[in-house]
Length: 543
Image 1 (cartoon, one colour):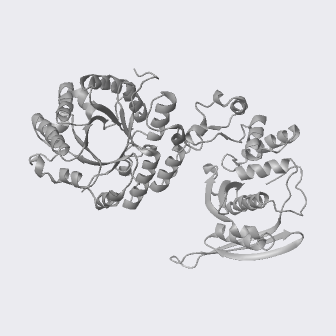
Image 2 (cartoon, one colour; image 1 turned 135 degrees about the horizontal axis):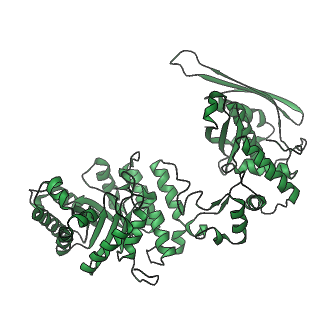
Image 3 (tube, one colour; image 1 turned 180 degrees about the horizontal axis):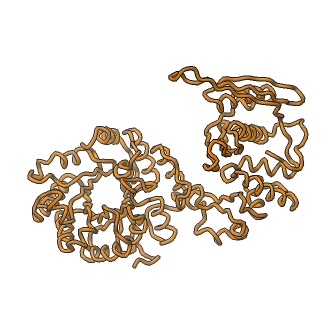
């Protein structure tokens, strides 16, 4: 069992560009892969697996692009397989491409489960051993570092322990620099991994032993950590755990676990660890997938607190309900405001949003009550900090409306089955007693309303020219009410520098949209500290 003073240096091997790219719905271009590889190198990954030369034009293009790389630490790895059965190793085209692609190292996989050898490859067990040893030996003549991935090793170990070990011995005897044990089907449990890795480490004490875990049983990270605890010193995985089927071991979870919880040197220093969340976000963006908000360590909600008792506790000492300092992985504590909120939530949230603000107890009580009432009708402020901040200002009498709605009207007209509809919004607003009447066309009723409102107001408030609606979400709150159900609209807005989120609720989707837009515009003007000559809102501080 590994102790906290273990002096081993754990190697990080990233396979996002190869195994991660096999995830359903993800496609990386060669340029995408180059950008990700550069980011992984800047982060400090030891090994970056780029792909399989010859498997696709994309991978071939990627390796061509990478010939001019200038990395200070990271090494580029080309992935492939043992030579094809029935062909001389020195004439195998796949092995030749691995040598010629310009990578710093090669990692090949071979069969270690006898069932795969006899049924999958259809060859004798000894012939497979010859393929493994011959392929590794030939590659070692041309490449400095050769790693061997023992595919299906843990299943093979259970089925035929002696043969699985013979496969490793064949690779080791031929000069392999690392023996990587693969839980290819992702079905092993941590105690099985630990017991097996200990036997392998004892059998091959002078060779790096690695782990490559898949997540089909939601055990990939646990299995990777179990392997390290049992003596492995090389961990393969992907950023955010992307990969075929259920994914791979998530390096975004493995790295802080190794460094912060196990005290192991994995090549990532304290400053590098603070870049973990940004690395996760970058790969999500390149993969064109939304981040998992509850992702451990780096997710938006990884350190979010909603219950009043929890919030009261973390205000006194964050470690009462947080297993690490969020900043250590580039994240931050979040206090959520909901119908479970108490005085502590409100004060903590206010401190985050406006550290210098002073709110009396009566105002806090009013805000808590108002939030509970509004959330009962469908409002949710967890993802709408701007609306919540306006709510606080209304409660404290520190808010004046910058404009008044007189009326709005939206037309949506469709002429013919194949003709796109046309949307037009007309709004009447009052600013300083002046009536402003404007219409605008848009790509849909929401866009038309957004454009009409800003067109009416930009004369009085020119800063609104910079403002854009950048995201729009609608959720039906009760499916049993069908088309009569209330809807919640969440809007993200930006002025090119800041982003903020607002919310609106109504049984009419356009009114819900107006409420969210109204808050978005008011918040922009509050941020810019634009003076308002309208009357303060009343005690109810309605949205």
